Length: 166
Length: 259
Image (tube, rainbow over the protein chains, first blue to last red):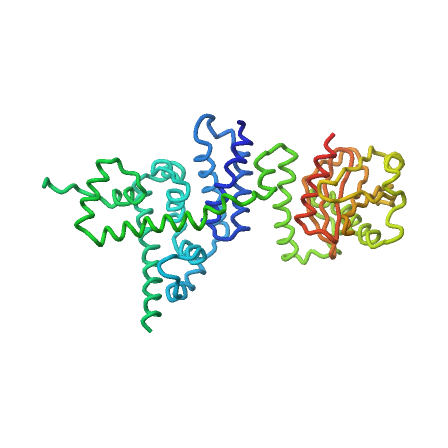
């Protein structure tokens, strides 16, 4: 299988990660597109025989960081936080939309670690290499990301219970 | 009971991810057994992972947009086609920023933009002029395709070819000769069974005109994709098709015109 075929094969995974990372479908596919273009431009830096998937996620990470840096989008979602917490949800289960928004509250470096571990099921070492950070940082970001999401989930659960009591 | 093992936060994360060896896992489990709060916390991390996968795994089953696949397969042509997606966005941005109206087409612009921009405008006008025609949309009908191609090639001064667009549900209606800014131009018309039309505008390029990437332009309600390849300039216009549909067709045309 040549590189082009392997790239095509990896697109769905890039799209899944990008969707979770940036939330919006069009923006996610833009990120994938830029990643693929960048990958071809930088292919000479990829060492054959090594993990193309890990390398691609590194490329995507760099493209994403550059984009974020270029746009400097402030986290406007922060304002929606109260609504998220107050909204009655169906039992404990997080709805996809809520999850989307909850993830958006995470600092992007924490989000990246959580998603690579959870969705891509990368080993902690792979995540460290992909993002160019020490493994200790991977673990602390993972821990913080999960704890923040858990608190958001609890907030939701508590709100749901309040509704029921009232 | 032996001394309790030391369990770190990293162990708990790895436990939640199911990444501990059998022995270590047992140690963490016994540690958690005496700490219901931590046990609940770790269980919540697991549920969170499941929720994330449930939310985003469906993306894996989605059909991959064609422009992404084209970019991934990279052949230089495919890459140029894929670049259109970027141009659509850029076009929208330019349009919004500069009020990119018709008059701006005439303005001398930076080389890559100017090269085909005049052609795109003419193609859009030709489309707007002829595509509403019911009785005389073309001069020579598709039933005389061979003659049409020979005639237009001769007049345009370049080997003109007619791509087959059946894959996109478009059939050739026919073609006509038009005046261009520097010589005769060929215009082919296609339509779907439902009567949605597009026109393909082909002009001979002066030697030395460099090849350009795919570009997108919009003139009133007519969408145009245009590019220069070898000795011809091409523009595909339609007021009836969406950008995506037109892009798909432009891709087909581009591939077929490959020498």
